[in-house]
Image (cartoon, rainbow, N blue to C red; front, side, top):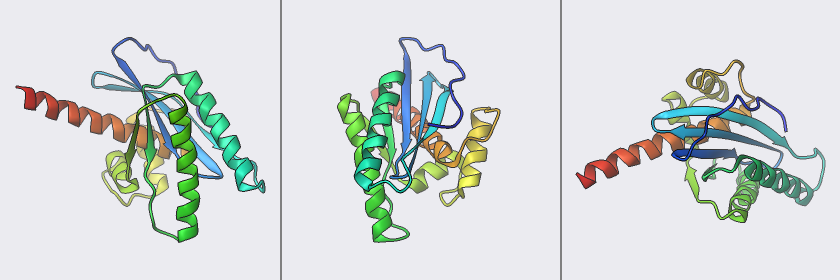
Length: 181
């Protein structure tokens, strides 16, 4: 795993720990954010790198093992995964689906709830533009969370996925509160 690591967190009983996963079969971004009320704090992010040239089964096993370790170590309340998209080719879509399956299995291993967001929804939440480039996502998550350095692209995508869930869950809480009053 590579990328920025823990910057500390206060935690607490009323905080929610969110692991965002940018699935793949070669590089998998992950990020842990902690949300307490309206405050969102970056905890850590990184990239799991599967062995280049290895058979797909070996790469998926490595990704699964590392994701399980990330989830075990970070103890999230929810896992957020990017939905599959159909842009470049059927082969690419199938490979991303395999990576998503591993991420979902890792979350299921711990009986964690899973939220899913479309790539355009994630980019829009992070940058205001559903067609933003990776470099724009990197810069915006760095700014939003006041990170000292630009996270690697896959880690930045995972941060954006977790941020999207933070924004979406805050919106849902406001809607629920309005419906109850």
